[in-house]
Amino acid sequence: MGSVFVDPVCPDTLAFRGSALAAWDDLAKSKSNTELLKKAHEMWCGDKCPEDVSCGFLHYNRETPVPGKPQAPMPRFNQRTASVFRATGGTHYAPNVIKHNQINLWPVLYEVLRRVDATTRVGGLIHCDYTNWSGLNDSTMDSQVARAFRDTIQYMAIYNGKIHSIHDVAVQYVAMGTCVDELCIPPLDLINERYRQYGLSGRDIIDQMVKEGWKQDATHALLTEVRQFIYQYVEKVDYHFGNTIHETLNTTAPVWDGALWHTNSGNIYGMNLVIQHAVDVGPCTYGWIYDSAICDTIAMSLGKSATTIFQLDLFPPVKAEDQSARARKQAEYYSLLIDLSSDLVTSGAPEPLIHFGLCATLFVLLVDRYHERAKQGRIPLEPRVAEEIGLMAGPCPMDAALEGIYRLHFLAQYGAEGRAPPEGPQGQLAKELLLACHKRAELRKLAYKAVSQAEAFSLPDGDQGECGTCACANHWVSKVHAAAQSATNPAEMRRLLVSGEVLGDDMALSDTQLGLVGHLDNIWALCVACRFGCGVGCEWKAFASYTWQRFFAASHQCGHA
Image (cartoon, rainbow, N blue to C red; front, top):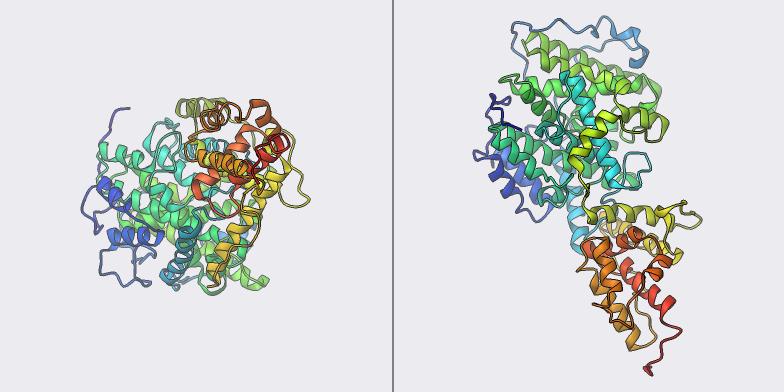
């Protein structure tokens, strides 16, 4: 695709003055999530920012718009019409809603990232890494990513009135932001390029922007994407422990703080920027881009309110204990949409920005993602969309190692007491190994919980994977265990186990024996777990011990005690 050079959309306000690729490479030196946040923040604000509610990276210091020549008619959803719609709760327009942050997010983010960094130093993987948050039972990560690209193509058709090529850098960027909403992706995996979509890393996408002359727009896109990955991780890592950032936002903060969090956790600012760049909207003010992005967030909620989708959201933007408080907050929330969209018009914002801010109400009606949520199941890809995705996917859609980690979480669920694995390949694994997956998953939760509660985490006593029979057995188990570090995909793992290269011809496993243990993709998930973070309860060492006991222990005679 040929490069099209257009004027940047964003004002040139960033503290970082280098190229977006130079910014990426500096961020990639981060050794912790906390360091990544600090680096991205300094690139945005500089090194003098006080890290309070005046910080422009985590908060939005909105200025009163300057009147200009309107480029579009006033929105039809306004302070006179809001009260007649059921989706708004039938509430009146709420004037003078606060439009500045009350909650300083810096202490909150620092505390969560401190716990995350402390846990990863101990065990590598965290309990939530690469878990499925779509609410749908996708058996592979590839299925989720394919549908994220489908959703992006549909989003952009609504935004821009055209079908964008799957190779369009804007599609790739928006799809990555869509994926992190449905997967729990460690922020460092974005920046160290472990996480890729169809072989493309985030750096590849930013590189394409630089080649197309995006200038400061590319750096804005990078930094808001990093912010999104951090926000998404922060809200998910504590979810199962009942103490998330949303509890704070919903109980003590005005609706502005919650609206802004949802805008940034969805990276609507970054998506707005790349979509406006795609239609060559021209230079815009920072306030136009941000106000339009917040409108998009609230308009999406408005569309969801008209259906059952809103009730399925894990992190609703409006929540309160009693009905009267909820009605008040709901009125204020939708009044923000009225105020900001009206200000966009009266300040002379370009029509595409106003359209971006309001058209999200159509998403619930037209985008397949929301139909799937309503029916709690996937629907087939439309042929035109499937054709586009096929051009991108190729024979190996997603990274084998990350697919293994994704599958591992399903195996852990099936290993829970009383939970029967499903029919088909997804659940094919010896019950002893399903139980080992479940136990290791519980250990990961315990490790994070202990750090969260400032407790000293001590690993439980128990079987560490040794067979305890003879030196030959333990040597065999050790060789199988070590092989995990050499395997890069399921086929390579199989070759190492059956070829005799690692275990010797007389002690190698056969394909028949592997089949008796479980489906190859499930065995691969155990192998990947060891590669990403071996430790007490290692799933792969459990596999090695299990296969020795099942296939060799009874017939092995060596004379060792």
